[in-house]
Image 1 (cartoon, rainbow, N blue to C red):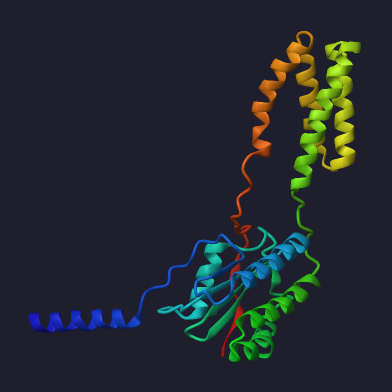
Image 2 (tube, rainbow, N blue to C red; image 1 turned 90 degrees about the vertical axis):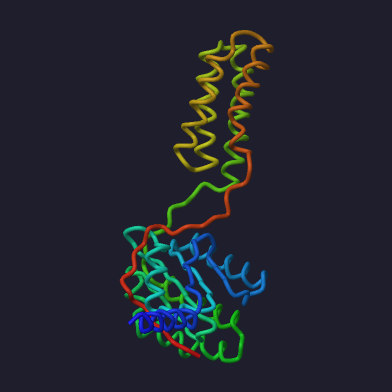
Length: 283
């Protein structure tokens, strides 16, 4: 009996060794995740830029994942696990899509979010794989196949009437914010010598806020500029130029976060959901 248990354990161990290492789902940080080194840095960057531009325009999130294998899982099981972990697409709109390539298994799959299942049903995803992508992959042109497939996906999603993406403040808006803020403080310092601290601060604050709204086009930033200018001019100026020097030094230290280190390049999903829709294929 002891020998039988030993042989059984040995067989199980050999089976696990033959199955190979388990591929851990990578943490989402980029639109293109290549664990095989298939794409060159330039190819990866160009594809990421394409997907980023489309997300900024349409709002939908598309990602590409290249792994050596999905074993011991089938690519369909692996795909839904990736989709659940990454949560691509906007929450409530569910307009995410993941293109998975399992290179050593010679398999590929589109994992399609719920919100895109109407414009990219399973049959359409299957045709894109078979008719557009597979011929490239069979020739060893992975970059060409991925781009051709993604271009088709983008054209389909672009035709779908989805909610417009929320506009995020750009770096230009941040620079404009800083410029208008300091401009308002400078104007307020001049006006306060003529109209007094409170009146000068009020004029400078209102003026700065109106100009910010006209130039930057977002109300919260304009209101914030106006309030900061009014508060600093009316409360910090206790005298002549010396007061400005001391007050300005304190302000500059507080505003350092606007011009600090660059924003993180990390990227994450928007909370979208998947229900297993999509298609798989091989080459």
